[in-house]
Amino acid sequence: MNDNPNALTDSPTGSFRFYLQGMGVSSFAHGLQIVLFPWLLVGVLNESPERVGIAQMALMLPQLLFVLWGGVMSDNRHPGQHLFRLYLLYNLPCLLLMGALWSGQLSFSVMLLYGFCFGTITAFVQPARESLLSRVVDSQLQQAVARASFVQFTAQSAGIFLAGYMDRIGLLPLIGLQLVMLATSGWLLRNSLGYLPESSMGRRGSTWVDMMSGLKLVWHHRRLFQLMMVVAATGFLGFGLYLVAMPLLTREVYQQGASFFASIQFTFMLGMIIANVIIIRLVGRFRQPGRVLLTSLLIRGLFLIIMALHPPVWLLFLLVLLWGGASGVAMMLGRSLTHEESPQKYRARVVSVYQLSLFGAATVGAWLSGHAIASVGVLTAIGTLGALTVVTALVAIKFSDLWQPLPNDSREG
Image (cartoon, rainbow, N blue to C red; front, side, top):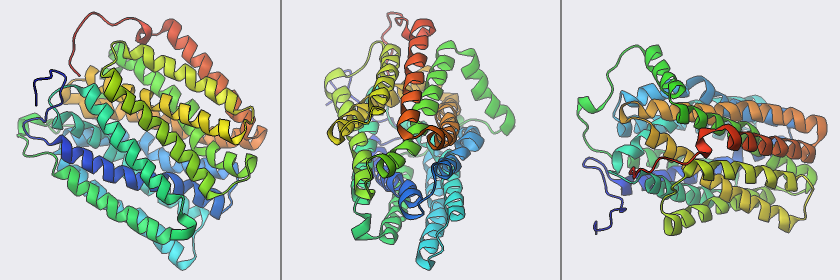
């Protein structure tokens, strides 16, 4: 079974299979969230672009405020047990939303509170979950990240697909299912890692000093710093725009409903799945991951420019599929490069800087996207941010070390 030197193997204390199961169940729940949250704003409350941007910002703002703290907590705790407790906390925002829907009191204020609570828990979950990944496999992190990404995107697609039937199933049953799946995921992730000696976890010191240690490590590590700048550009120019523009594009440009929006989300995830299947089955491991990452950023900008020309529906879905594929490659490479370049002792803290770069920039991007769409329209805003993405990619290709060939080494992922 392990004659292949590229084969993934469990760590002595971990089970990658349990980790993947936990990731899958969690991602299914988040797939429901991807459709339900924006459509409650756009399709149920009929909010303006500015307010949709503000609500998406409230969902992601905790990443900016708490993710570094979350990374420190993850380095100082057993990540499986820590995740189990965090996943149980998702009950609070889910029950809040269910109560508002049940009583007919759903409002913009409730959505802001729900988004901020859900995002706060996620700010602590993400660095812990990424840190757990590197503890449940012994080698080949690029392959491990690719397989985890495949499970994540596939399960999210299933959740998105099911959420597309919200008119038939009802909002309350879907949110109740989301609650159950999140609790189940926490149990599976807890069981993916056995006992860890105290020496394998960080010493508890000053939280502020520990938070700054992750930032300082990235600041003084040239490739990591440049990687985080590219990740921030992706969050600001792409992710933030996607969260706000896609539901508004559905409603205002194509004049469609929830099923059309869910189909867009499903197509995007399908592109991510296809990209990760290709990586797992055909590529295996990129020898120059930085070049692939920057090329992906350039291509995504071009897709946005074409999308701004108001293509017919079939071409829109093709562009979304390709955009998802390029984003899947970029996400896999960003995560794997972060793991490979950071020492195990500080990995959760460095991962938290990655999350801060992506979601912190996306927070601002979502807010600005809402205002840009309100000012110049959906299509013009998409085209403008697409052009900025192309310019950013070209500058990074010209000046970044990420484009330069790696030394001839044979580092294991």
